[in-house]
Figure 1 (cartoon, rainbow, N blue to C red):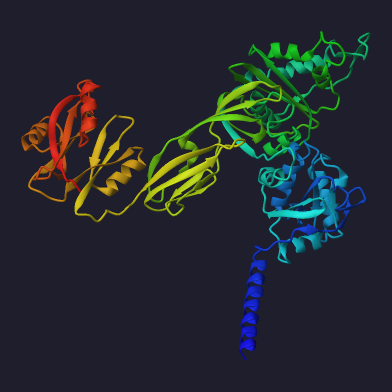
Figure 2: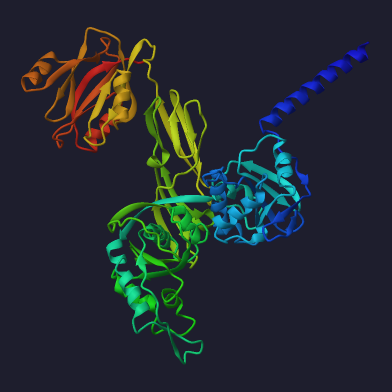
Length: 607
């Protein structure tokens, strides 16, 4: 009987384990097991592809629903966005280690594959766009039969499934998953946020210069052996494309950081059109760096009239008969002026906009592999409960990097980092955004892209409730704009001032809740300062001089336990008093900084 009883218990636990597994499977927490997975699918070039076709590479399979609804819109826009992000991303093929397959699922898989090809404008090989066959079966296997959150990504290595994830929004979400399996090492995609100085009035002058070259007597290039000028005739004048100009301005900001036809994140220039919402395909790009901010100087450099064959690439681009429109951008930097000319196959007829001359914030995607080092600091700060904000507002970052031309560069950036919190019940974080949850102090930590370095920041959250104690905590705050130190025992007043930008400096001293010695608080509207005194005669005299008596601020300890010293700054017109129980601070202000000792202002408690 004992044996049978143990058997029933064992059956119970087995049943419980199976039940838990079924629940986890429904929620997607249990994924496909690693191991050999054989499959066959159809490719857009009418061939077939199996897991063994690219067994020498890391295979990234992107499962997506690329069908359209009756209005022509994609049924799953997230899938379309990720495919564009990956399809135009140069890092996915830059090392030769990785092959990306775009797997179109569902009954309309074949038409979905055609949609992928149209979306990417032929940037991806037909053989890498696949559908049908085992596509849906693989999805079910990866998700345990539940409906996936598209797009669904999976990595196969040596013909075996090794990892999967769902709901990726861009190639940046995929990079950490993929790169850890690559011999070339791990990398990530991060944003460099910086200020860019444009001169679009000057850049727009380039249109007439390019058209003069195309339609004038100077429209020629050398033959291969530099013995004959080949003249180009009947080229149409190009139109200025205001939609393309937006892409050119983004490109110029990137070129000022990374002077190369590859972009800082390794992606192709055609991805730029998709990112900026430009509907047409780019047909050419010219880049230049000059010491002069005059567009004619840059144009003369790009025309390459004195260059031999093989060194007239910029000239040939301007003389192309396949272009339909043109735009340019100019960015001024300490080392010179950067110029970008973009050409497109078609003209995008959008409303005319005024030329932008000035400074604008740019967001530039970059691979972490460009990083040499960071110079980074973070300011500890205090907030009140329920406050939210950006950690990038409290960090100072300078990036040191090497360009593709081996230039050693540095740039000040407001790059948003991804932070974690050691006490999420006090401060929770989501990427660069923090939220103050409850009272206390949390240490936030962020990894600096491309390095093993981390950045730490302490965030103090102030409670909204008055503390229960036998004394009254006197809070000390500092106004960085006026230089005033302010003291209050009121939690709501303290929190309100922190919200307005005052710096919380902690508890100045502890005061009795009541005594026979009140400390009076006054305010001078003209000088914008507060004054505190035990002396009723001083209070009344200041009121006669125009000061406003506000109330009793707190009480002094009748037992005179802890002296609070008063100092006066004779060099300040207003906000010239300081109060502290700290004898070291008191002596330093007097001996080192020229403040006057005005004795003991009042007394606090020693609790």
